[in-house]
Image 1 (cartoon, rainbow, N blue to C red):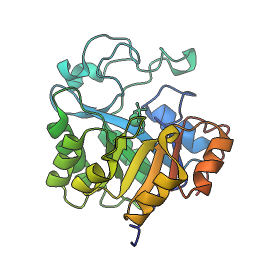
Image 2: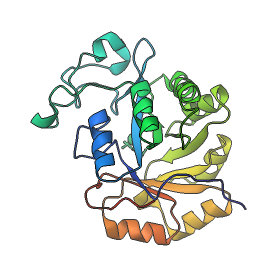
Image 3: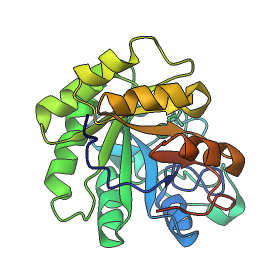
Length: 248
Ligand code: G3P
Ligand code: MG
């Protein structure tokens, strides 16, 4: 079976620049780019007033100077927060970016985006739809179309309903569930996006034989990445932007 076009590099920077800068900030994405990375993964969810923002956790506690659920806060409040000082003094005052700001940066600098739709609990469909619409509205000039991924089948279905041209990847935790192929197909995904530890050469082969590309997260050792590429894995998402050289 013919494989879908895959305009993404073999390496993608996780959360911007992994752990070297505060995750899911513009500073992190810029740092990844400074190491030569031309693609980044980041996590997007909705504020209470439906602004798409970058944040991994449902709560603000770990990666900002505030507490409580992101979904309970309006953008006016989130925009005032410090999402950098938890990481290190070099990043004090680094703001939470909107998805729109990040799209503008990535488009202007030819950085490909792997947008992980990371809904707050109960907001799966609206988050998927909002992310897909934002991409449709703002990525018309992007050199590389964004790849939208999610662990949530509902979020991916809503993204597809809102913007049928969206390129989707279905994420799975380790171990890979037995119905991974069915789930990928049910949302019209172009790729399986697995925990790297759950992949085998046979799974990569099965995905490719069924017309799916294969991405995986979060592989931080070059020897492991080389093995994954030798099996034909199309993109490896990594924190180790300083140790694993960017590979187109
Ligand atoms: O998108 C791949 C990876 O980021 C998924 O796991 O928890 O780092 O968002 P997590
Ligand atoms: Mg992620």
